[in-house]
Amino acid sequence: MSGRPPAEDIANSAGATDRTPVDDADVCIVGAGPAGALVADRLADAGHEVVVLEAGPRFDFDDRLARQEKAIRPTYSRPDVWDSDPERDAHSNSGEWFYPLNHARARGVGGSTLHWQGMVMRLHEADFNSASERGVGTDWPIDYSDLRPYYLAAERAIGVAGGDNPFAPPREEPRPMPAFEPSYSDSLFAEACDELEIAMHPVPNARNSEVYDGRSGCVGYGTCQPVCPSGAKYDGTVHIESAEEKGVTVIDRAAVQRLEHDADRITAATYATPEGEHRQEADTFVIAAGGVETPRLLLLSESEQYPEGLANSSGRVGQFFMDHLFAGMGGTLDEPTRQNHVGFLTSETHQFYDDADDEFAPFKLEFFNYAGPSPVEMALTGDDWGDDLLKRLQDGYGTHIAMGGLVEQLPREDSYIGLDESTTDNHGNPVPDVHWNVGDRALRTIERANEIQRSVLEELGVEIEWTAGPDSTGPAYHHMGTTRMSDDPADGVVDADCRTHDLDNCWIASSSVFPTSGAMNPTLTIAALALRVADTVDEAL
Image (tube, rainbow, N blue to C red; front, side, top):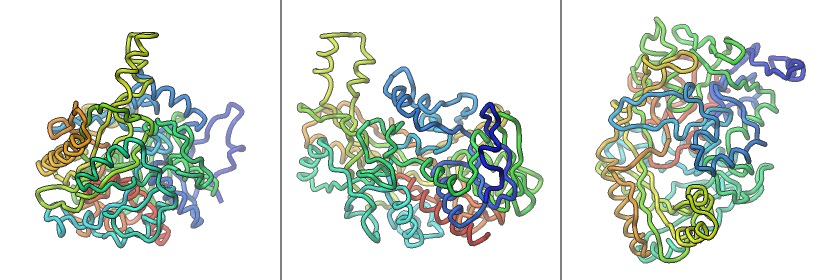
C-alpha cells in the first residue's frame, strides 16, 4: 500500500508533480539507474514500502526519436542528447590523467543505461581472486559462486541475447535469447582470426534479438549509443516502471543533498526539488548513485561522528577509483566492410583474458561494427553538395574497419574521487574532483592488445590509420571501486553483503563496491549485486 494518495489526487489542475516525502517508508533508494531500479522492483515484490529519489528528470519515451535526431547531428555532443547541465554536472580534475566525466554521463530516471551500448558479460572466476590468482590487486570477500545465481537472475531480468563462449566462467543454462547473427564485418575478421588461431565468439547483449518481456526485438536503428528509440535495448526505466506498478514511489528531480544520521544509522535523506527542499525518512537506505556520486554524497554528509565523510571511518570512501582502459586500432580495407550497418558489437574474444598475471592485466578484444563515419555524419560535416557530395561518399564511405578492447586498471590509493571545495554545483555543493591515475601494468597490457590487433588487421590486409595505444588511451566510462567491499572494516566501506561497515541500515548497490575491475563491462555484475542487495535488505527488514 502506497504511503501517499493516488497520483490523480495529488496532481493539481496545472499538472504539478508531487515530490513530497513518502510516509512510513521501509526503504529509501538514492538513484534510479539500473541498480536502484532492480532493488526497488525486487523489494516491491517482497511487499515493502519503497521510495526512490532520483536527482535527474524523468524522460518521456516518446521523445526518443527526437533524441536520436540530436545524436546523428554533429552540432550536438553526446551529453546534449540527454539534456546535460554544465552547472549541475560540473566536476574537477586533479589527477595525472584527465578524466572527461561528462562525456558519458546521463542524469535521470534510467541512469547510465539510457545511453550505454548494452554489453553484459560476467566477470571471470579469477577476477574475484586477483591477489591469490594473479599476485596483484586484492581479493573480493565473495567469489564467483556467490554471485553465480544472481548473474542468472540478472540475465533473465534485463533480457540478454548471447551464445557460447568457450573462455567464459561456468553457467547454468543458455541466456534467455539467442545471440545476434555475426555481422558482415565479423565474417571478414573471421578469415584473419582463423589463420592466426584466434577464436571469435558472440557478445552477450542486453538488447532483444527477439520480442522479450513485452519489448520489441532490435529493429536496427544503429544509434544504440546514445539512444535506442525502439526500447529493444534494456535500460533502467523498464524496472522503474515495473516497480511503480507495484506501488513504489519514484521522485524525479530530487537531488539528495546529504544523509542525516546518528552514530550507526541513517535517519533521513535531505533532497532538493524545483519546488523546495524535503526530508525523506525510512527504516533502511540503499545508495545506488554510481561510482562518482555515491562517494560524493557520503563525503558531503560529514558530521561530528564522521568528520571525514559518512561511513568513512576507514578513510576509504572515494579511494581506488578505477575504469577500464581502451585499446584500439583501425584503418581502411580495399573492399566494402559495411561499416555502421550494425550499431553494436556482435563478436569478441576472451581468449587472452585468463593469461593475466602480475605483469599483464586481463583484457578482451572487440571486433567493431561501427568503424568510421556513417553516411549521415559525412553528409553533415562537409561543405560539398550534389555530385561532389555523392563522389565523397562513394570514395570515402564503406571501407573502414577497426578493433577495440578493454584492459583492467588496478586499484590505487592515489586514484580517487574527492570534493573540490572551490567549485560548486547548482545547489551550492562542492563538485566531485576526479583524481585519476593509471599504472604501468595497464599500459603494458594496452601494448600487448595492440600487438594482437595489429596482427589481425595486417592479416586482413588493412591499411592501419590510427591506434589507441598507451599514449592515447582513454576510459570506457565504467566508474568502479570508490566504496569498495572488504571483510576488514579498516580496508573498505561495505561488507560482503554490501552493507556499510559503519551503518546498520545502509547498503550500497553500485560498481563502486568492486574491489577490482576485471576487464568486463560492469553492468551485469552491478545488476547481480543489486539483486543480492535486495535479498539481504529484505531479510534485514
